Length: 278
Image (tube, rainbow, N blue to C red):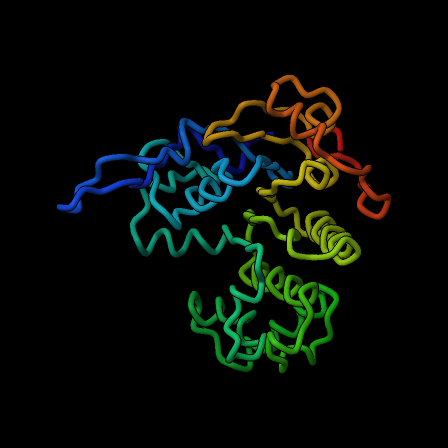
C-alpha cells in the first residue's frame, strides 16, 4: 500500500540562550532526523514522555512551524515546497485536533460557527450552508444539531472534544494529527471519544497521526508506533510488538510504567488495517 504521508530526516531546533546583544548562544534540538510514514486509513502513534519532541513533530508535518531540515511528502506533494496559497489549499486535507478543546475554540462564538468556520475560510460558503454542514457534523459525532447554538462554556470536556473532531472533519481531510486528544478526559469519556475516532476512520478512511505520552492508549488505537526520546525515534514497529516485545531500553521503561491493564472498554473493536496487529 502506498504511503499517504512520508517524513524523512525532519529536524528542528529552537534558541535556548541569547547574549546581551540578542544573539543566540545555545540551541535546543527539539527534533532530530525523524523519519516515518503513514498509510491510508492507518493510525500511526508517536509516543514518548513530555519533551520528547512529539508535538513539535506534528506541527512540523503540518508546517505550523517551519522545519530546519528534512522532507514532508503528503499525498505525493512536497509540503515544504508549497507557497502560501498552495499550503492553504493543502490544509484542507490535513487537520489537527489539540489536547485542550476549550482553548482551541473561541469562547465568544457558538460552537456551530466554530465548526463551520473552515467552510468560510476556504470556500466562502454562505452562513446557511455553513450552519447546515455544522449541524450534520455535530449529529455525526454524537451531539444534536441544536448544540450548534451553545457556547464552549456550556459544554463538558468530552462534548468539546467531539466538537473539535467535527471541526477537523469539516473539509473532508485525509489526515488528522491528534495531539494528546483524550489526555484531559476521564476514562469513560476517553473510551467514547476513541471509539468515535475508530468509527470515523472506518467510515471515511481517515489516517491519524496519534500523539500521546500514554503507551496503553497507543496500544489500543494505533496500528504502528514510533517511540520518541529526546527528539529522535528510538524504536518503531506494530503496536502489538512495541507493547508486548519492546527492544529499546527506553521503550521497556515506558511499558513497565503502565500502571494498570487497558480497560476492556478501550480494547479494539475492529480488524487491523494493512495487516498490522492491533
